[in-house]
Image (cartoon, rainbow, N blue to C red; front, side, top):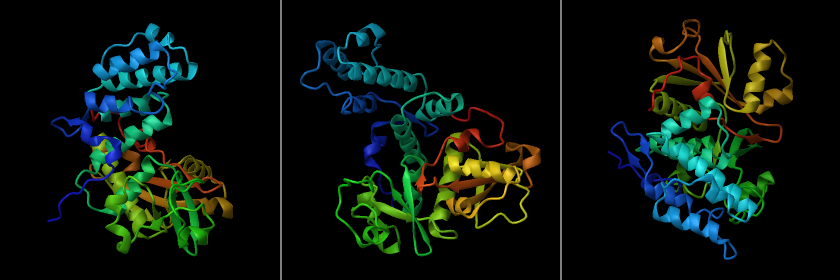
Length: 336
């Protein structure tokens, strides 16, 4: 029996408690970790009001902060950062779990900075994948909270972490990056020979994933989708990666990205897709439900089609929230 290994240490999951159902509960230590963010650390020239807020929250990160305290902060950027942070903290504290806090954000379309929401998604995904030793699934799960850049190499479709692969990346060039003409970073494609290295590199996000149709990467992404839906909605689904829509009735679809939604809309409307648009559609899944009672009757026989597509420049930003609000299921609060 393989022993579960740790990963994504920087998401702070070890600072969180868990309730009897295994959901993540906010702790003082987790809240204090936000206070170490560069945007919230008072610089040497910070005013006394800003220092007082920071010092007080270090002592008691749950203490109420009245708006008047924040308006006294002299620097406008610092004041706005603190207003956002306190609103975020208060939202987390209003809920019994991070999962419940996330569900309210996506269902009510609440506006918080993407970086905070993505960090929340990572912590929840880390919980959902606890005990998972399949590094292909772990790498595929990174797509839920980190934007990717998709490039083509011969017959392969390769997803590279967008931030790690950006100019000024921290690492030295590799043959793959040189071949593809990408910014110079030390990056490998996840494969059997490189798989064991994932554990020590999981917080570096410097392993690429092959998303070619029929390959292990797409199968792994399907497995992550199953875990995400099960963890958040308490609904069991099955995922089948497809290479094309063959005689499908296309009763219900959802885009895993914005471009995937646009392509789904075009197919639904009977529009012809040009070659460039077809080329951006890199993934297609059929989702079915274990329990027919979980889904609307007219969808049961055909299932739900999930479309994964890149933007024109190859950017891929997976919309994890669509798997919560886009399924044809009764809206229920599975996670309280």
